[in-house]
Amino acid sequence: MIVGSHGHICDQCVSRTHTVMAAPKKTASTPITTIKQVSDQAGEQQCGFCEKRRQLVAAMASAGETRICNECLELCDVILDGVPPVPSR
Image 1 (tube, rainbow, N blue to C red):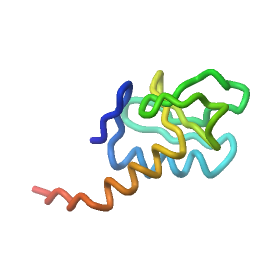
Image 2: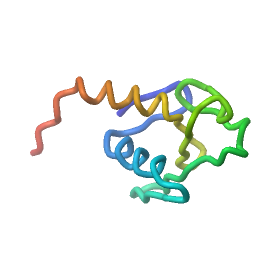
Image 3: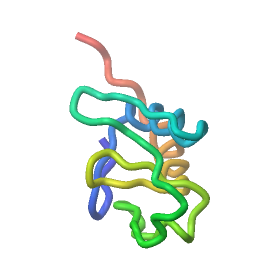
């Protein structure tokens, strides 16, 4: 789990969010919510990790009230690449 100032995201949702950001009008379902793109017109919406507004980033996705921008999503990739996988039980 990666925790931001006003949001959190798990490794599986990082992957799902990449899928959503790559395709217009694409959504992805999780057990607790649906991930969708934040439109360009939602310029005042903020990333829950870096707090940048939608108008200042290339893309943004939301899951409920939590949002993540493309820049923070890329940082999540870097973080997850450095974390060894959890062994299954």
